[in-house]
View (cartoon, helix red, strand yellow):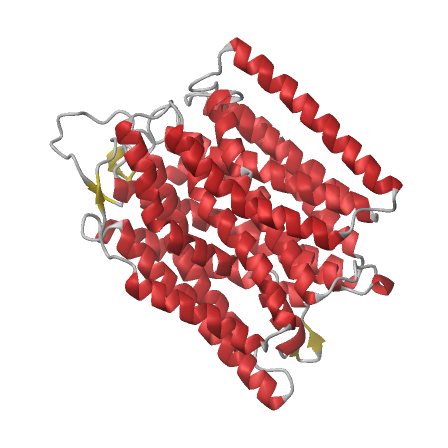
Length: 501
């Protein structure tokens, strides 16, 4: 396999680049903190107050988890815009990492208000870091082909899963066995390490553009700053008012935020299409995203339940005793990044082998099929658990994680690569925000639908998702052809006016 931007250099040579180690370590520690906190979130929310938890019902905790995942993805839209127009890629990444670290530190404080504040900060920081990191990664690989980009993103996915694998093991052991907030504190320490190493390795990124690619005019920037301060003041006043009356009711807040997560993607699409910043060809590009938007929403709705419904299955229906040792339910969250780590090299090789023979539409269909298989496996395990009235083998849960991991290895790298190579100059961060729109909408829907877990039998709930994904995968059109601008630096005389997406 050849390296991006260097057709004659093996792809594995990318691992020896200093810029790669800087981005790799940054994302590695972010994944450590993200997966570590995610492994505890649902379990902490459903733990009785007498045991230090929030005492929420399974359905409410699932909605809270889905809303957090949705907010993290949704924040990628303004995060990508800030990277393009205000902060630049480098400053957006650094600011996001600092905000994430502050959020995890708040969650380490044993107070309900600090927990919710920390959850909000982690979501906002993730929205800044995640869409801008792949932009920086792509800037360091100019001239890469579509297949090379997909292979490089797959290997990058693989490399950061090392810490994602360790995160739930560390935070889960501390959180479930010692103290919940100690587990959250371990995630904070991991993110602080990420910030420190990024500052140390930042000079290796000087070859990439670190300022805004399309900076706002001074007057527009001043209006933005004034609006930000006004918004912060309103948020502080609302929070103070809620605390003064004993706190806001959780259910109405979750309902309002969930509604916002559904409305915001629609609003963003309409604004982007009707704004004056995009030309005719660029608007056609955005409309092209709608063709794979529906399957993306469905897949990320399933993905967004790995830390809630899957954690519920691990805690309630999985035989976790091994040689007299009771495996913490949170440890099963490590199986997902483990499968990503093991399978990513094979998927990277596959993208190079099928280059030019299979468009993204077909790949998304395959990814959705994997997700359907994962939920079907878990539904079968839940059916056996209900029939036997006890716990079932962990093989059912691990098999479900395996299938969903395969689906993510399709939706993740292929989606990121397609977005990066088609984004017009000056809109890369915002186009990365578009990639996360489907994830935000899906996670929000999945979180709201998870309330049905307390109403329907678990196996019925899981089977419904499996059937919907299977039908969509079969009906999804296999190939799309759409005019789209070429990647930055591509010549106009290549003779290719259309490309598969």
